[in-house]
Amino acid sequence: MASHRHKFTRGWWFILPGLTLMVAVVGTPLAMGFYYSLHDVFLYSFRNQVFVGLGNYRRALEDPLYINSLRTTAIFTVGCVVISVGMGILIAFLLNARQVRFRSFWLALFLIPFVMTPVVGGIAWRFFIWQQEFGVVNQILAFFGGGKPY
Image 1 (cartoon, helix red, strand yellow):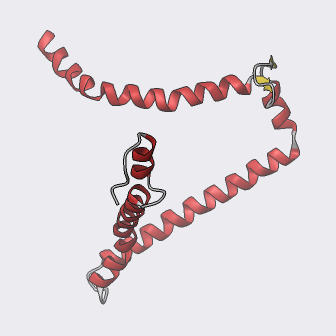
Image 2: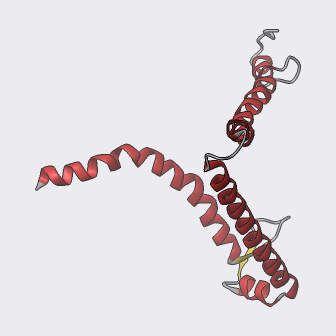
């Protein structure tokens, strides 16, 4: 019985560091946001906070501009999801058919954005890191009194 329990819990030990980090990175701002949503927070005197409970939520739900923005966001989100998923399924269904002319060309054409994104990101990262005057590496070296490598 103990061996069976060990097999079940062993995997959790492998994901525990990443899970802990994710909970800290996601959970901390989420908890702080909820805390601040229950208070009147003043921008210029951040220490002077007044607890209002759910008053901020009540005030937001009574505001017609906020309700309109929620409605607009919901319509936009549902429309985008339906159109994106619908178009994706339609394109996948059409490209899956053997009778499509130039099938390899169309598959390559639709895969180009997935391939180009990391390439462009890598090039931009290289320029950001190694740029001669304002690159991160040169700034760090200059901060510690080192010379510029370029």
